[in-house]
Length: 174
Image (cartoon, rainbow, N blue to C red; front, side, top):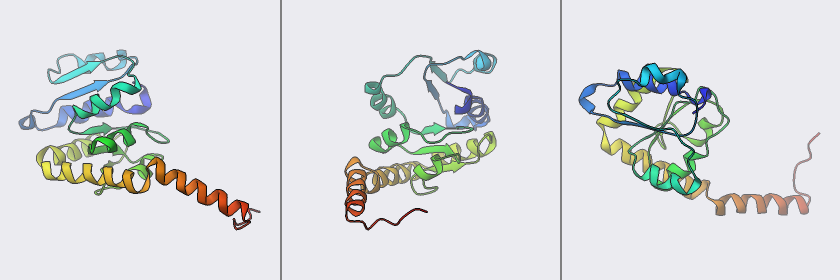
């Protein structure tokens, strides 16, 4: 729980959700919650687990979710997106840094503008209202990572690059 992860944006978006969805928000991670304490008080459908999360726990935490939300205000990438892909979990994330390279809007997730609670809330409502869209985006993310971003695919790309370099077929950088 760090400022750049956009917890304030998420809380604003969550509070703006139509109550008819009966959505619940689970916030898991270690960090300083004091800046959010006033907003968290009285939110009955919000569960906070303010603790460090081990690698071994990530899969079971994601398996218990319907949507992964990454409302980052800045980021280079996210290590939790590949874990979500392994679960076929749909992702809503901010269009920042390398996140836009990890998620293809409308195919493997939904991308929203950073620091935009209204846009984030609308994206969440789309997924809450449409279970088939959730399934399609989750499948899209899983397929993307299986076909183009698996360790096997990355290793094959590195191997090809190394072979090309050894054979002198790599373009020279001036």
